[in-house]
Length: 92
Image (tube, rainbow, N blue to C red; front, side):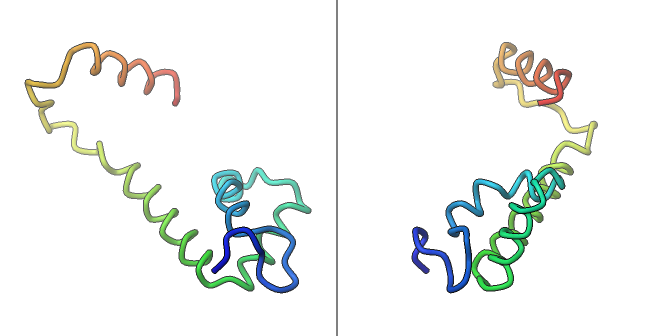
């Protein structure tokens, strides 16, 4: 599929869809953009698969650190650990 040219009768490209995906899944797109996004999905099976894969990736990443009993490897720099913990506290 040509990433610069949208499927027939579509107003956004595959590339544009990828730039809106996080906002779409968070329910934060304006109504007209959401309609264009969903219209694109109705015409483009590749993007349907991309959105499904993105959702799975987000779900897996949320569960990546559920095991609090796992020890941090000794070779991880303390400054990196501090930065990660600070980012988590800041909600990033």
